[in-house]
Length: 382
Image (cartoon, rainbow, N blue to C red; front, top):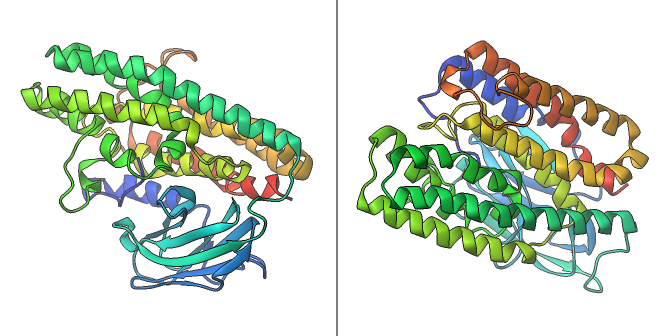
């Protein structure tokens, strides 16, 4: 799910590690960010100012600066709220640069101070012939392969979810607990695609502290609370299980319609690392079941898949970057392997058994990968 604010239940040491992970790839407010052709986006607690409202089709760079007092996130959106590109967890006084690929049409840039609500929006117009510039055929092949991967992950998820929801409907507490983490892997690997639709993630993967005012809590984490905290399955949970089936079937059908570009793949890989930093490392994601490390691994695998597909182009444009990414992906995988029975298993140690020092080691490994990964989008469009 999209990251939320650090919870007050997080220990001070964990919070420090998480904040390091969140801000590790941001620049200080006095640092140079974005070139002269970039769209400057200045976010405050009450405004979202953009330097240009009309730009040509092709690659666009958003140079974002948060001058407010709240952590913010910035989105480039289609008119129907599908996400073209995003950057989350931009702390006060920090800068981030986002590279995206856009066709001619109408869009909106949204700043979300406090990472809540619909955000403060500015309309922009992209002009041109309706298509982006011709690109290397290898990038088209990467997009096609990633689209296939995302669909395969959705298709493989549905029967795993049914095993979970069937157990809930049968009132089998232990079987439902066993099926919970495996049912989430395909989602976690391709979460940016699911989130790009806007309406599916809030129904399936929201945590209680991420609910908007008046929003009904549904999805995996609502059922997780029943299974591990309440330790019982009631009639309402069986209804929620069926709704989860329905919502994820909708996701499965819509995956093929997702807007996927080389830059959205690269940005999505970075978003998956942000998910790890702000939810899994802190232990907030699966706070009742403590199956965070399984989700953690799914996020990392999804990020690495996008990277490997883009690597043939990125390595030509920036060989030093891809060498560093190879090193850091391997390093993070090595750290994660300490917490599972073997390298092919997703049976990880319960996260409540992972010490503060071990969480710090995981956080450091995420930071080491997130910094170079934030440069992948730019390396694919040089």
